[in-house]
Image (cartoon, rainbow, N blue to C red; front, side):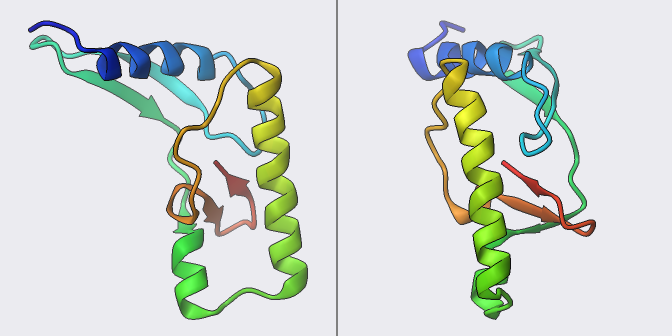
Length: 104
């Protein structure tokens, strides 16, 4: 299987993110390719729900929203500091754990 650019970019980004240890960034434990050439990433499991579900239920307060924005900004700031750009930041890619942790 010939590797295409999105495949290579995914592996490069997984390698870069695996070097980050930040409380608001989901940990990347492993990455690579399957025997048949498909890329994979093994990430931290966050027991919670995506921000998109909270928005749908209108379950956010102003204070909670500001806290979430601050946590996401901290995560993105750390990633940017290391030269990593999150190419798909959206509510469904932000998880709020049952312990009130925000993970990108």
